[in-house]
Image 1: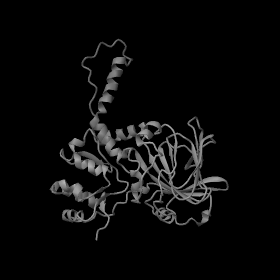
Image 2: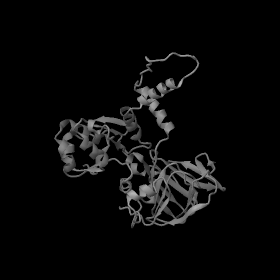
Image 3: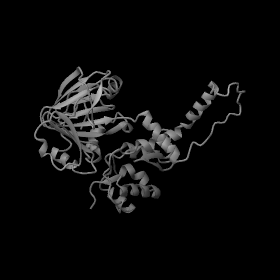
Image 4: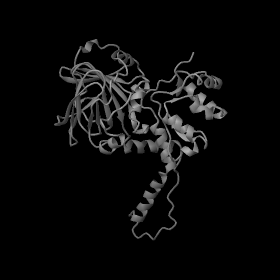
Length: 381
């Protein structure tokens, strides 16, 4: 699978469109094939571990229901949509789609969402707070996009936040392989013209409110940042009820000093690698030995689990620090190259790992990750 941005480079896209304005990319994917069939998607939506919902109208009122679902017969043959979140956690082929957008770092990635809709189906006019590449699969879907502005939003249903009617600046019919890029804040509405599938690669960040709240929990849970303000150079106080500018500066400096690179990277690494949806991990650890791993990797590559978040920071990678699925990992100061491989590469073969397979401690750690399901072999007898 290869992305074609219609003659512009990834660098130009980031400079001219990313978080700035929408873009229709005709035939961004040549001969695009659905990553799964509607029947396979319906099967996923039957699983209680998979986040799914369906949206439709009943008596001209919007309705939304959350899975798992057992049947779709009552919905008829028009005006409904089935949505599955975090497709990349369950369908390995979704990784191929994500890799096409890897000019954007993975810490910004939310997930791949898939929707199947019957004619007339959609989720209504709405505004998203994240960037999204809507990749049209089989079928056709009409998209209307409005401009930024003070659009009034309202709850069309407890699970559906809609926006009032808007004047479109884009009114386009997407065909298989076409892509619609939308930055945050642009109202949009998609209506399916025939049975169709679309695959949305979404990128988002947390709000400052959510990050500060989670950081406070991290500080409390780890009993850190207990230092108090020291002011041995205090000047004479003339008004006891005032917080003067000097004291305000002390308070601000204390808070800023708390947010050093070590704390922010450790907290952010844990926070950003937590999966919002379930991962397809084994119920019980596998029983592979270190010898098993070294023998199997001679025959087939080691594959990173879909949806697994694995990140490192430039400031700490030389110390052997990186993060997997909400946990900090410490490998040692000579492992920066290995960490980069683990985080940047989806499949690793024997040649990739050969410098470290002779390291007993590293092989033990790798085997633990394989047994936990973070990395796996496609075919194990």
